[in-house]
Length: 358
Image (cartoon, rainbow, N blue to C red):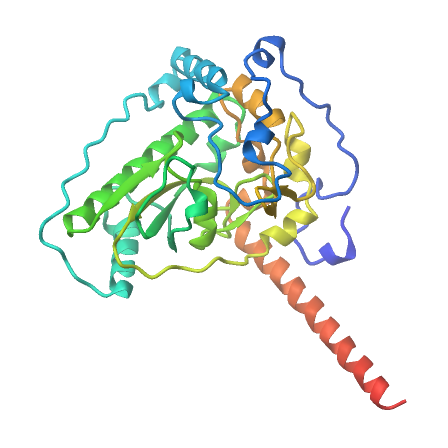
């Protein structure tokens, strides 16, 4: 069922409705629930806080230093015990960057930005599908992981949507980690290339927590909009991609955030929320560390994540993630907005004319 405003959108998503949730809500088994600390993950994340602050680590760090360390340890042990998953989990993550060259290559910021994109997307030993640049915002960094770099280069690494769509089966988790590994390697190659030009750079990728939250950096770099499921939505790849970053003092030109209609679409879509087994996805935006945005309930999401070798259901079922559909949806949403705004402007003009000529 669709509203009149949705008449111009592709009619392929029967879950785009306003009916109550139909599927039962998953509850964690006792052995999983016992792993969780008394403190709420939402509290750590700053849900409901009115003041802006740096984010806090919840997972993917030294387990002894985080409240959810037992959950992380359990997941790691489960991965290592699985005959297939253990082959893609990056356990030894030691990396020795190349030295920063004494010979500093000088270029204009615009030239460097173009050279970075060319290396990342085409010429590097390990290329990626998306590349954007943003000036660093210190609020993205975890409190004890500040930086003196000035720019962040954000890379988007496409996932095989068919493999992702098997979530929560292990084949989906394997694809996620394969692309995390590709993204990390691509970021390190790019950082080494920059260092060879005489400029500082350091590459970071998932799933381990690096120095910053990559999603807000990717939004600022123009790679997509935040979706209801808490992940990015890109008009080309939907949500079926992963991120890695390079922090650098290379003089660059920042990209701008994009408006592809995803946020507007998410307000009327229920697909990911209906598909989420633990019902962790809210239909309304939430106040988090002083900003109102889409938010996924950590205390609901993480137990299912821990019980299923990771998840990925929400980004797999996202209508934008279906190959070839993102641009179609974006065009439809933006066209609908233009028509609505045009009709509103015409009505306002007509009303003003009526007032001038009683």
